[in-house]
Length: 107
Length: 494
Image (cartoon, rainbow over all chains, first blue to last red; front, side):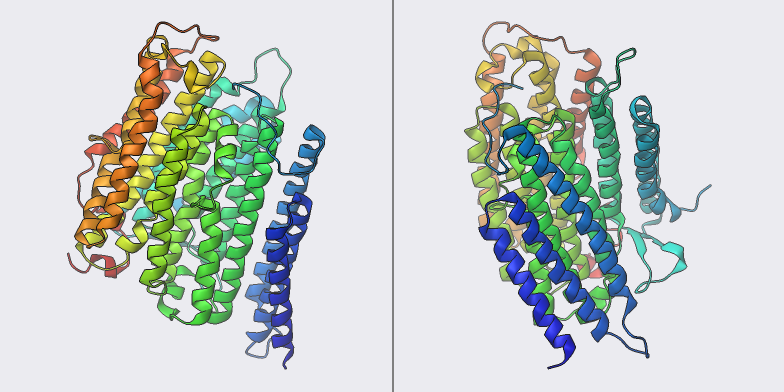
C-alpha cells in the first residue's frame, strides 16, 4: 500500500465520520465539530492529490495546496461565525440547541 | 474608457471595495457608500450586458495574465449578463427601500444594525457577482462562501432568539453543502488536474470519480438552494429577517447556488449525468412545488407564507435539467423558460417581500387573518402584492407567465407531459395563496394603521411589481442574449 492510498483512506474515514456525526448529533456544537472533521478529511484529500499529482521533479502539485490554504481560511471563519451565533443563541435562550423558540406574535 | 473585459473584475471589486469602505468609515457613511456602489454596480452590469448584446460573444478576463489551468479566468456569458442585470435591479430597489428602515437618525447615537446591514448587503452583492462571473469551480466555491457568510448575519439582524436559531440552522445547512461541494472539487481535481469550467468540459468522461463528484456537489448545492426535502432551513430564515433582507435572500441568494448547479451540469460536466439523475432532480422540484404551495396555503403569517412560496417557486427551476439537457428546439425553449423563471421569480418575490414589510410596518403585525380592509388603507401596496402574485401564479401578462408557458410547452414538446401537469397545479395553488391574502384585504371596512407609510416607499414596491409585469413582454422564443456563450450543442438545430 502506497502512502497516497493510506492517506486517501484516512481522508475517506474522516469524511465518513464527520458526515455521520453531522447527521446524528442534534447538538449544534457537535455538528460544528463534525463539520470540522468533514473539512479535515477534504483537506487531507487535497494533500493526497497534491502528492500524487507531483510531476516534473517537484515535491508536489502546488495548486491543490493553494486551494487547501484557502479552504482552511474559509473553514476557520465559518467555524468562528457558527460558534459566535451559537453563543448568542445560548445567551438569548439559555439553551445551546436548535429548538425553535416560540416566536412572539406580530412583526 | 475601460476595456470591456476589465468590467468583469470591476463588477466584483466595486461591491467588495464598498464593504471595506463601509467598514472603515462606519455608521453614517455606510448608507451613502452602499448607494454609490449600487449606482456603480448597475452601470457595470449594464455595460457588460450591452457589450454582450452588441458583439454576441462572451467576455473573458484572465486575472494577472496567468492562463488556466494555473491561473483564474472570469467569464461572462448571456446567463451572467442576465443575472448581473437582475441583481442590479433588485439591489437598487432593496437599497432605496432600506434607507428608511436602516437610517442613522441625525442627532441620535449611531447604532450597529444599519452598519451591519449595509456592509453585508454589499458583501452579498460581491458574492453574487463573483458567482455569476467565476470561470472555475474553486473560485465558485469561494464566491459561494462569501455569499453565505454575508447572508447569515442578514437573517439574524434583529437579534431575536428565533431569528438567531434560524440563522444558525441556515449556517449549518450551508456549511455541509459547501464542504460536500469542496470534496467534489477535490475529486475532480484529482481526476482531471483542473477545475476550469472550459478545460473540464473538454476533459470529463462519465467515470465513477466524476459521477461521485457530481453527486456530492449537486447534493451540497441542493441543500444551499433549499430544494425539497432540504428546504427546512429556508422558511424561518427568510421569514425572520427584516423585509429588505428577506427580499434579497429569497430573490437572489438562493439563486446563487442554483446557478452553480447549472454551471456544473451544463458547463463543467456536460453529458456526465444520466437522464435518471436529471429526472430525480426535477421530481424533487415537483415535490417542492406541490408541498411548498400547500404548506404556504396553511400559513397564518404573511412572511412565512411568502417564504414557503419561495420553496415552491425554486422547484420550477429544476425542471431545467430533464428539459434543457438535450440539443434541439425544445431544449432551447426550456433553457430560456427556466432562466426567465429565475429572473421573474427574483423580481416578483422581492416585490412581495417588500410589500409584506410595508404591511407589517403599517399594521404592526403580519397575521393574514387581520388584513381585512387593508386594500382601502394601502391600495398601492396591495396592488403591488397582487401584481407580484400574478407573476408567481403565471397569469399573462407577467414574467411568470412567460417562464411557465415556455417550460410547459417544452415539457409537452419533449414528451415529458407530467412536468406540465405539475406546473399547472402549482399555478393553481399559487393563485390560492395569493387570493388568501387579497380576498380579506379587499373586503371589509377600514383598518387602523399603526404607522403611516410614505408614498415613496410604496412606489418602490410598485415599481418592482411593474417590472415583474413588464417581463411578460419578453417574446416567447429562445432569447438571443441568453444563448451568448452557450455550448454549441444547445444551438445546433437552429
